[in-house]
Structures are given as structure tokens and as C-alpha cells.
Image (cartoon, rainbow, N blue to C red; front, side, top):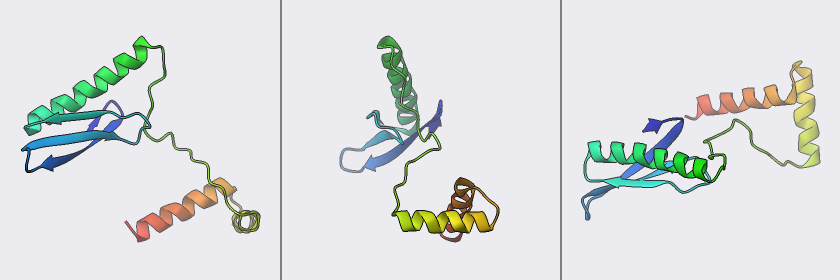
Length: 109
């Protein structure tokens, strides 16, 4: 499920006959539950709205899912090899690595 830029993942608890959900991709814990599809969808939206209101009331920036940046530490020798490969193709290191990651994902979805 998606709402206001957030993604929810839901599992069904067969014993309790209830859906449990959690917003994924954030550091903050945002959960929701319901007994039907309509209830879980509504609870998901309500939880996001409550979270955004809570952040606003505390004057805090809400956590957003995936900013498009991540820090990756690699050994110095690997860093050099990656840079050289990118330079040989006339690309920046960032563009070269993104291209390689996209290629990897398309080969192994």
C-alpha cells in the first residue's frame, strides 16, 4: 500500500483473524491493524496522518522513505578500481556504480 509517499507492508494473522501492518523504509515505527481490507487500508492512512500530525506538533521533520542516497564504505583498493573503471567509460563514479547496480537488479529481479 502507498499513501503520501509512504509504503505499508501487511501480513495476515490467521489465528487472530486480523491484518497487521507496518510502514517500511523509515527509521520511525509506524504500525496499523484491521480486520478487513477496508479497515487495514483506512488504518494505514490514519497512522500516516497521525504520524505527520505528531511530527508537526513537535516541530520535527517526518522521516521519509528512501532519500536516494546511502553511504557505502569500501576498501581503498576497491575504490580506486571502481574509479578507474568509471573513468575508462567516461562516467563519474556515481553514474557508473548506479548503472552497474541497475544492471545487477535487472539480471536478478
